[in-house]
Image 1: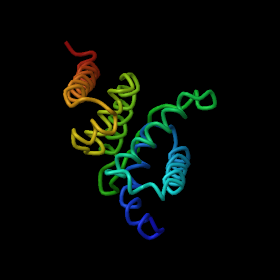
Image 2 (image 1 turned 120 degrees about the vertical axis):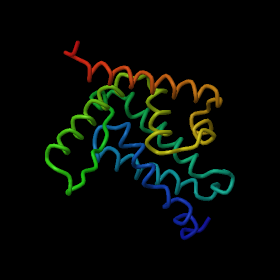
Image 3 (image 1 turned 90 degrees about the vertical axis):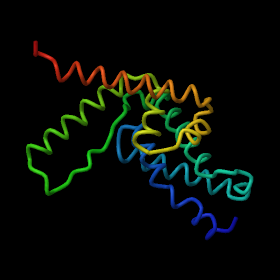
Length: 169
């Protein structure tokens, strides 16, 4: 694959790679490093790229595995799941504070989920992947993906209900 072809194939989904890395790693810098590392690995596999029927799925799997390896390493023992809060300058300060509080609660709740539930929830609800794509990325059967997603959503819902009903009743 020539450089121009490679760029046309890989660049459209590089932001997804970054968002997945950012979801799994603690900082923008870590996510940027991970994304750059994955792009370099993809470039080194450039000649054999034609073998993969879905380059994006392959790249997402590489990103997931790279980030999980990074999280497991001793040097990264203090990394945790994070999420960006996209702000709209037109919203009121009160609305922004409420949104930030909600994001912090979601981060805390998602930190407590098992790794597989975090991944399925991220890929389906944040990245908007189809179930078939998630099955391929995580090497899971469709039923397992649906059950995992259902359990993750239920756990999040229960924790949010606890948070919002605390001190009432």
